[in-house]
Image 1 (cartoon, rainbow, N blue to C red):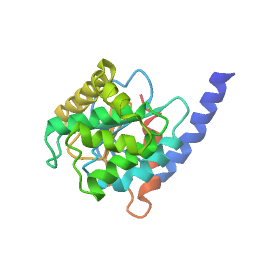
Image 2 (tube, rainbow, N blue to C red):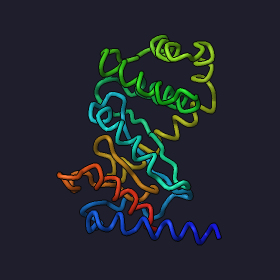
Image 3 (tube, one colour):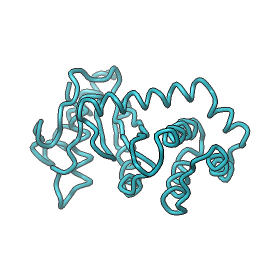
Image 4 (spheres, helix red, strand yellow):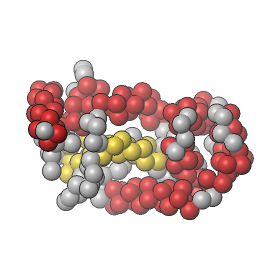
Length: 211
């Protein structure tokens, strides 16, 4: 019964995506890998130092909410922007990992964006990062403990590996970039200018149906 319901929902999703545009590989999306991920996922490669990423935050939240129940939305911070050193950006990646484990994760993400892009504070030290988390109700000592933990460092290194792998495949040339199931990159510059956000959402849903 569950399988039938799942197939029915996919069938409903297909016309939604297909009517938005006749999506074609090499035009509206790019195949960047031979195989898909073991579990359905939409991965956003972004940076807290990127103005476009900040502008797209409301859309990314909307996109995450529109995904099927069996699909995860993963935020993957990158370290190649010129606004700060790779080492500083890696610490920001670790801070994101910590934030994603906390109930106030959304307000923490907003606060990091605000500190870097509105207050012009690059958050280049542990002390500055700690203040952001403390302002959002996180115990400072616990924050530093998490930042030094094996689990957080491993997750941040995994994000770095995803970034490096996709960069080597030519999939990431800027941010924000969306990769669906580790195989399909959305070519945002080829989507509708008049209905861009809906077209973007529809192609992501469409790519989730591909193998």
